[in-house]
Amino acid sequence: MKKSICLLLCLLVLGYALTDTNQTTSSSNSTYKKVDVTKSGHIPLYKNSRGFYAGVDLTRDNSSWPYFGPNTVSMELAFYSNQTLLITDCLSFTKYDCNKYQCNQFNWSYVETNYPYFTADGMSAEAQVYLDYGHWNLNDYALIATKCYSSTLNNYGSGLSGILGMGLIPENGVRNYNVSNPIFSLYLKPVSGMDAILMFQKDLRYASSFFPAFTLQADQNWITNFTGYIQMEEAYITLNPMSIILDLYADTIGFPVDIFSSILQNFAAYGVNCYGSMSRPNCTRQFASSLSTLPRLTIFLHLPHTGIIDLKPDVYVLNYSSYSPSSQVTSFTLNMKALSSKITQENYVTPAFDNCIILNAEVASQYYIVFEATSLKFPIISFYSATNNPPVPGSIPWWGFGIGGVILAGIICACCRCCCRPKSINVQRPLILNDQYTQPGMPVVINSGYQQPQPQVVVYQQPQPQVYYNPPTYN
Image 1 (cartoon, rainbow, N blue to C red):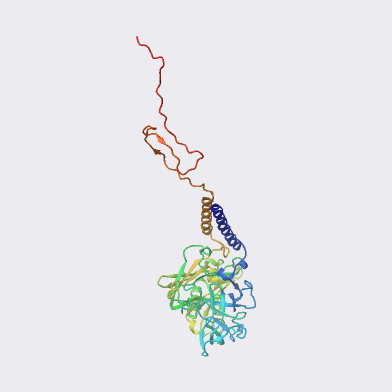
Image 2: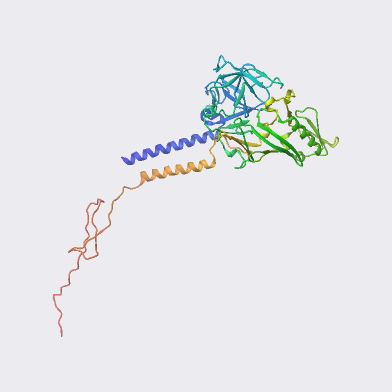
C-alpha cells in the first residue's frame, strides 16, 4: 500500500513539472501575443514617424490583450517626469473622457507641470492608468490638463492620449510601481515582431556584454545632472552644469543652443559646412566619401564616476550621400538641433529644459538600458551595448534549462529510490558461541529477523575416533 501511494505521488509531481516546462517552452516559442500581461512584465513599444509609444489601459480590463481594446489608448513614456498626464484640452492630444472613466479631482487648485516641449495646467485627479497589471499602474494623482502653453508645433501629441510618468513617486513606497525598488529596461530594436520592448526586469541576454558601457546616476525622475565636456577629435566643448534626459518621443538629438553652435563651428575643421535651419541642418563636405571619416562626438560626464556617451557618425548623420565627382562634395543632414525657450517651432523647449541635452531613440537603440532604483536616493541608469540577436521575450535562458534539468533529475531519482528499492532486511552478524557442541572460534548462525522457511543451526560436528577391531601385532 505504501509503495502504491509513493508511486502515485511521484507521478503527480513529475507530471506537474513536465506540464509547467511545456507551458514555459510553448510560450517562448510562440509570439508575444500569447503572453499574459498580468504576469509577463514585457511591454511592446510601437513606433511612429516621431518616436516610440505604448498601449495603456484606462480601466482594469485585459480581456483584449495584447490587442488595443475599447479602453486601450496610446501614450508617450516620460523618462524625465513622475507626473502622468491625461488631457481634456492640450495641443493635439486626444481628450480624456471624464464621464466614461474615473476622474475625481482631489482639489480645485491648479497644478503647473513642465514637460520638455510644453507646460500643462490642470488638476490632480484620481484616475486609473495601467501599463502592466503586475508591475506598473496608477490609481491616483494623475494630472488632468485643461490648458497647455507652448511655442512648439501645434500638432505635437497627435494620436496620443497623454504622457505616462515613468519617474518615481516616493511616497508610501513607490506609488506608480508595484514594488518598492523597481527595475525596468529598454531594448529599442525589433524583437519578435515588436518595434521595441520595455521589460520590468534586467535581462543581460539583450546585451552584448555583461558589463555596462557607462552608468549614469540620476534623480527620482531619471534626470542626470552633471558637468563635463564634448570631445570632437582634437576639439573640446566645455559643458557647464546641465542635465541630460532620454526622450523616446524626441524627433532628433537636442543640444542647448550655444553647445549646438560650437559643434557646427568645430565641424568646419573637417571641411563640413552646414546651413539653413537650426533643426536638422543640411551639410556638405568636400573631397570625402566615407561616413566613418567624420569625427565622433564623445560626451564626458563628470559624476561620482565618469560617464561616456559616444555619438558615432551613423547616429548623428542622416541621408549621407556618396561622393559626387562632378560637384566634388558629399551631402548629408545632421540628426541634431538647437534647444532654447527663446526659439519657436522645432527648437522650442520650456525654460525648465533650457540647459538640457536630449538623447533620442536613435542614440538609445545602440544600448540595452537598465533603470534601477535599488536606492530611491541614488537611482542609476546603466547602458549596455545592445546585441543584434535578442532572445524571444519570455524564453528561458540556457542556465534556466540547466537548473530545471537538475531539479527534474532529482525528482526522478527520488521516485526511483522510493518505489523501486527492496524491502529492508535486518540481518545481524553471526554470534560466536562456545559450548559443549562447538569448538572455540567456530561460528554458529542463528535466525535473526529474516524469515526463512526452516531456521537452520549449523553446529560443528566433532569427528569420531577411529576404532580398530583387529589390533595390530607387534614383534
